[in-house]
Amino acid sequence: MKRAFALALIPAALLRLGALADGGASAPAAPEMSAGAAILIHADTGEALYEHNADERMLIASTTKIMTALVVLENCSEDESVKIDARSAGMEGSSMYIGEGEEYTVGELLYGLMLASGNDAASALAIHAAGSEEAFAALMNEKAAELGLDNTHFANPHGLDAEDHYSTARDMARLTAYAMENEAFARIAGSRRAVVHGREIYNHNRLLGEYPGCIGVKTGYTMAAGRALVSCAERDGARYICVTLSDRDDWRDHAALYDWAFGSYEYREVISPDTLYRVSAVNCAGSYALARAESAAYALAERGSPEAELTLELAPFVIAPLEAGERAGRIYAYAGGELIAARDLVFTGETI
Image (cartoon, rainbow, N blue to C red; front, side, top):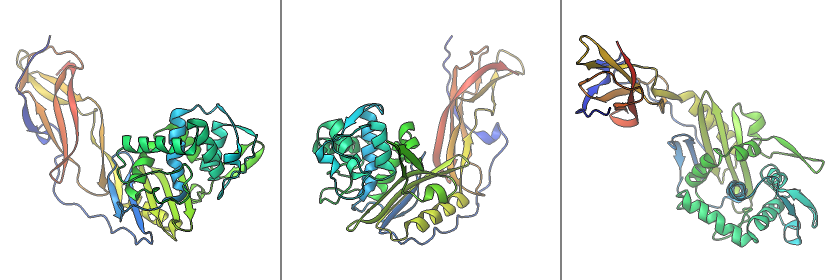
């Protein structure tokens, strides 16, 4: 039976151990970067830990292929067959060396796209998925709009320089965080090598073998754009995305930013479903109904900083018995006075 009660805000410290003190050490300053634009975000929350010119529209070279791969995977199956035509076989720039009349699967071309950075693979995939590079670019721009990438526009699927082909470090980081949630994309972008038609191809992303925890994603270079690099690294449950554009020292810069982030921050559980809270059961003398958070909540925090402050929204009393899973209220986590997480509270169905 449903019961309605007035809810009251109660400091969680009254019902749970772990009230916190103010203060805590500040994270050390981020390292110096040589990039024209850069950003490092926490992939799960989207929070930017470091940024420099992150909203400046710039050429992005072959990091374009992150969107190309994503759109292909969302519109095609990896086992679909693709026959290569003359429009793709002779593409300029980096190549996986496909020939006119040859047949590949979408999956094979995706490895050539993301590992060898094949412009020919990008063209073949675009034509297969949409009929032409121009039609495929329209699909890319539709996806960019869907993801809220307001400072991004694609003119082609490969990243060769074009006046209306651009993005920003922030938009590329947000796109990559989304793309890495796609299991097929993450598998391909994180592969160090693949065999396609009996030929080995290797990933241009050196960080995959050199930086502990790196799991992807894409390099890029043109004379006009300079060196572009988008990478992803994960340790101890924390995943970060780093983007540098026009960066002559991108390998070092990414490694330095990751060292700083992993050393300075942690992804911390701020609301635990294992913690029990009690509410007086007025029809059971001396008894309490038990409630807990419906699910865990996590937040990024500086290492050594205080625990989050918790506040409960609970009725001052209830009438037992209560069904397990029945809503009890709400729990809020604050850091520095700002709300960082919230979850519903539900009754366990038990009393003590």
